[in-house]
Length: 395
Image (tube, rainbow, N blue to C red; front, top):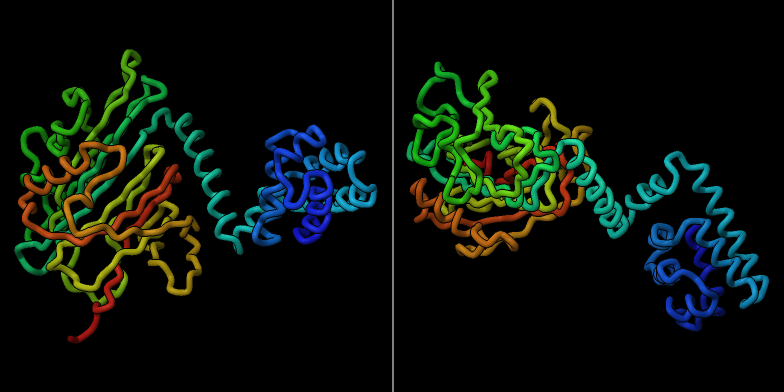
């Protein structure tokens, strides 16, 4: 279909607007809308027929061109374009899901089409979920640092969460800021995984001690602590008189989060479900230079569910049924404190350094990686995996 449209469209545009056709000349010659003229010309410049099918206007747009060009070009060119547009309309009408479904099929073979359509879908998801949930933030960041545990058997984590430009669209909406899985009191000591503040076990303030008021702008005294089983959540109550536009920073230590030695070449590190719609999310992973030489991260996106259904990314690029097929790339960061910086977040480096100093890790050198996304999909779990080629080897 793409080849047929190209064969009908390009000669007509050349006849009207010269070779190569110009959107401005096309609009001026026959009185065509400028945005439609630009899209028509871009379609003929598409590198493949599949890309053309994504860019080309709807069949009605092609009919408008044929009608306006009718007096300016030979009738056989107009007839050829009308025929192609009718066949295009038949294809759209006979495809379940219409044009969107055709674009989804095209995206299987075209990365550019995939990324453009995905961006449009993510942006629409952000707008709708912000309205439905009643809140959003400009930037959300997480920074996970893997550091040695003094027992030399396990790895600890230092994690810093930041919400920048946090807003409630409906001020009366309560907003969960932080949830932590707290170990039961009878949990065994030693190598059991547990969450602590940067200074150790929570003090008299309980879960509030996980917040860093030095890098937050909220009235922290108004937070509610909600406990449900072993999960403790900090909630900012709704206030009809309060319009929130703030930044919230929290940090904690994960004691004995991972075994130092593992037989698994790809193992799960951390999962994050995005509960707050965000314009941008930046997730960083830093590994102390003394840990896991040669290991590197991967990411995947999952439908929230039981961990038994969680599977690492497959080597052949196929996807497990629990995965959401989203485009992603990981950037390796420089081995310097400047790696902590996030564009548009002026105090990011200061907040990270502060957390590392309080946790006694300021002396560590790290190698780091970053995954970031504009308009990430809410309520989808992003998972860090660690691939370690040396795992399971004898030497």
